[in-house]
Image (cartoon, rainbow over all chains, first blue to last red; front, side):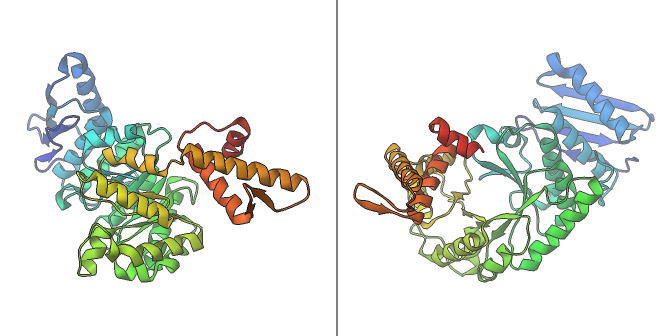
Length: 98
Length: 295
């Protein structure tokens, strides 16, 4: 998946997460995380986001995450939305989204 | 049926803790056009991850005549809620079109055909006029919900506390549902600070015969349950009736009497319904009764 613009999704409400993604000129994955549960879950969130990026075949991205204690399923949904927006995808391939 | 805005993770994750019979995740009116994609992904992931226990899960999709409806169906069938609810249903063809699309997606995704059920929401005069044809339009249909906010706008009026302007539509929807063997769910009561008005409305729609009510605030759930739960007096009276008819049947008679009143088939059916409601409300019934409702 190629990111052609900045994509953003989510809010700063409790149990939500705001995720911004854009292409990384350095051609690698860079994750910047701010979370109210970073002490306990920072490593988990980073590796979870990396695994979703890998699954979606994103190899170059800067990912800004402002987490308000979101569940994994919420982080995943917000990341998927932000990535689709950044890639300019408006026709969703639900056969491929597992 | 508790409404849950589809793009609010805080409400989505806790939707079932208020013990409503069903939760309805809304992708339609509570989600702005710019956030339709985000809400769809959120409900897709939530349904695949969160155990809503024995609370029925319903998703209100956008109509197929909008740019969002087809994607909603493609995503939601794969997330496997119990029910998909179609808003603003006007004709049987509206339901048939969604039914056909759900079948195609079920087949493509390897899901047993017919496993996702359908609810039709009727929200304008055209839908009310077609209520019975709508009720018969698909074997997936399990119920019809009435949406009064759009309905009163369509009628060029507004909602009153007494609900006179809704009377005919409620009756039509109820008759159509009963004739087709479907559930009928009444509309929301929007003034969440008017508990007394809410109670009056729930008592009214219960006495009309509705199976339940849509609610927009978790606080309203317990009030609906309280009104729909039979009293101990009603439960004991129902037990007497059922025991009397059982005894009469064992003696070869189809008619019995309790406290001097003749008991016939409709009274027996109402007594069974009372015990069924008691069972669904979590009131302990004796072992034989529990066995019957768990069967």
